[in-house]
Amino acid sequence: MQHECILVFGCSDKLANSGLKADERAIAAQGIPMRAVSTGSAIRNGETHVENLPAACLIPEDEIDLAIREIDCKAIKIGALISEKSIQIVSSTLQQNKQLMSVIDVEPFFKASPTPKPEEITALRKDILPFINILSATVPEVKALLDEAGILIDYPKSIQDVISMANTLRSLGPKYVIIKREIFDEGDGTTTLHFVLCGDAEPLIVASRFENPKRLFGASYSIPPAITAYLAKGYGVPEAVSAGFKFAEEMLKGGQYFD
Image (cartoon, rainbow, N blue to C red; front, side, top):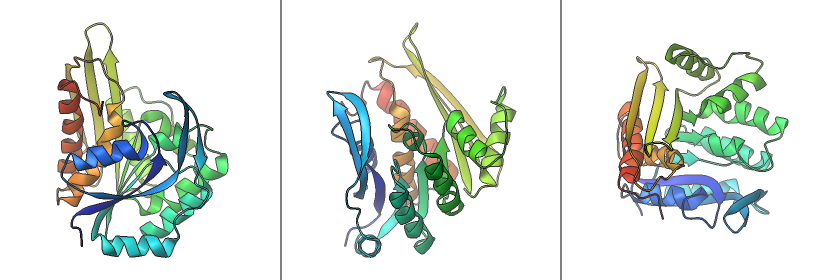
């Protein structure tokens, strides 16, 4: 039996820095194995993303439950869910395994092609969010979820607005909400990673600006799987989130992003 393993739902992709491959590499970098469940495949023309195709046949729920027991699963990480069926299966898995820490990154869900249907966004809100420990998103995705729920809120103009937005989203179920931002400055070749973590305690607000020698962008996708790995190792939520962002920072500072 494997120990401290993570179950990951996401999209299969041939690129090493995208989808389940990126999840696997970010998690493996923390010394944790994972078991992948593909919700679909990314179709590309070269490196250009064209669309996501839902999996023709998803793994049955009873097989997922068996896998969780076999691998001694410690946490669940959720990425792109590109069909209502995949949302239903993940929802059932979360409800049957409430003892496990769970992390969802909704950025790949909203940035999928084609864009999510309204009923898929509703299913995500109603069937996934109430059972999630940590939700990671950027401001536009948080606003999309709140808009769908009929909660009208303006784009934030200050950190306090971001905190208010995160706590409003927490009212829909997630115990913690991370609002993240990755900025690359073409002028001086620096990256800024910024996040706000809201939960039961005082908000955690962190911003880090550093040199990005290879001028890479998109490393924020590696943060949620890294956070999940730290949770599986026994870190508390604030410590796991901080460590996940530090992992992405060190990767970019070292000129690496799964290349």
